[in-house]
Length: 344
Length: 279
Image (cartoon, rainbow over all chains, first blue to last red; front, side, top):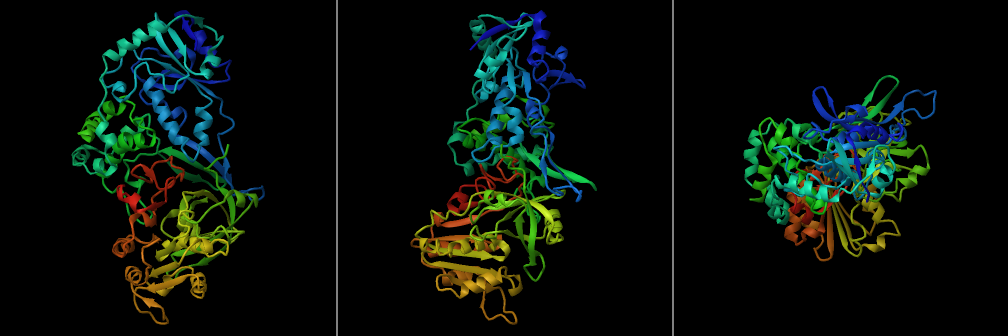
């Protein structure tokens, strides 16, 4: 594990160096249309002073819309009507700087879905595993942040190759993985330094202002149907609009739809983000719908985050406490409140 | 890296109208690249995504048995965009199949047991696969008595008539095919599947039931098996839900923590008792 500092006047050089001379796509928090997002950006435009990005960084690896494969209809050529994969070879690897520790943990939850016990999603894997992920710790978590309540920390290290924190207008960095160590070694702008004590001190200070653990012990010990049949679901669902905002901004929501598009020459198979709040999401061809009302659909989302994912991922919570859904829900549904009801 | 989203290209090698209402057609596919047939190694109870370029995909149970070489067979009900398009396709047309997906029936765990297979309507597809597989000379000795109960509303709505007519002539499988009401030209059983099950199902000792059919049939057959003494561990079912990826990733087919595509579609009644009825 190596420790470095980057002085304020060396920041731009350092960010440029992260692209390895343009071989890597550089993603960092930068402003687009008045909102801060984790996007491909100019090293000049990186923001270090932010709560968190408006949307989660999942779209770097799981774009909102993505072409999976294409076919042509030209019978004079070989293989008409045979799909060929798209986007698996030509993508340049990424380097992400400024991932918040909560979001990095969210990516770990997604990774265990996209690379599950039976199948590997090559569209996810080719982007995720080749990416270098450098976190930026939170000195000053936002009011709706609760990573500490769900097992994380504003200085958390899960899913990251290195973690940085802001220091005297520049950065202090610690490598976390072998890949991160190898990648950062010798990069322009870096100076070796001892930052361990300072990091521990800042971590403790940041965590001190954060909420304590959310008790989910009863949820963990209960049978699925015991939680599923609790009476509070209907009350929360009465407020829910099924708008799907929570699912789009959530760093661990990974659901998608697959749709074909075509014209007279050929076509594409795409995948697009989908939401379990939608009636269409589960309806059978026959018209039967296993989750026919918004109560079932809203319950599904919270059961998935707080019961099903922990069951399938060795107890790991499906909510990483970024607070985006809490802030953006138009009817103020708060996952912390629902979690308390489930455990109550 | 293997791409589980990419269908194997296939050609429709034959098709037939399966039922008198013309809502069911049976398609046989042959692989454009013969090596893909080996890669598509499946067992009875698994399903595949039938993949039509420009239209989309539908998850359909595999009706052929892996012991039948040179083709893969599916019987498709016409309900939505993709299945309606497929019903208008012709022999020779090129499309794709993606799979095999899901888990098969627990054929190895069932070894040494008597098996009762109960089917209603067109839900018989993966059970046809199972019976064809079980009655192969190399597999038949692994199982005890095999009983097959199959019902549909009318004689013309029964699938795979050629197959069960042949099975009726065999001594190593008891076949009970029934229709709901008397019909001209029908001299077989008349009555609903639960009633026939009550009359002919073997005693529960060392016996397992595999049951696939419309919800109403399952609703009334399950108590018959329970009364006969079958344990919920020995009642095996196959679920269906709306699916996209078939890989346990896209989300929608979950029933509680289990994905019907990746963790099912085969479940025992004991397992289903622990899960929401979201199917």
